[in-house]
Image (cartoon, rainbow, N blue to C red):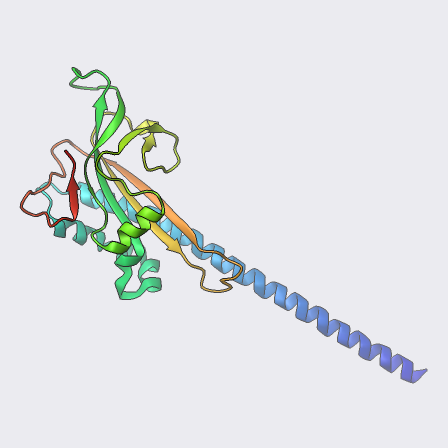
Length: 224
């Protein structure tokens, strides 16, 4: 009888070990999942803030802009979105899509001169980041805005050829678009990569953000 009790106690110890191992693995999985989710949302917040800060920085320029001005302003993303550089290294500009687009609203009444109602916007110029990686990410996200794209009133969601209805106020608009491919650091088989896309809008006076015709090296595309 004593031998039977000893065997039963040993069996219970083995069962407890199995249960403990199972719950330990479950807790580890939950911790990893929580870490990745937290990292994703932190990166999304930083990208949103980075886009708004970049739009504000560019909107302050009064002198005609040259190619290096766009590059200088974009370099601020290193400090605004530090996760990008930490995951991509020194070649971080190839891993983040950056586009700045300057649009002007077209009034419904062609004779209107002030407080005009508009039903579309046309692109005056656009810059796609100055590097191949930026253009590739924007293209993959179906968000590369080029000359000839007409922006129409749409929903609040991000789209290549629409703008939120609330933005159709008649004042020139600077749009900053950021695209980044979020890559999980652990358990890649369970967590798939996800494209993060954010846009920032800044109303700009008509005399701002003009282009210096002598400072273009095929990076910025003025639109006819």
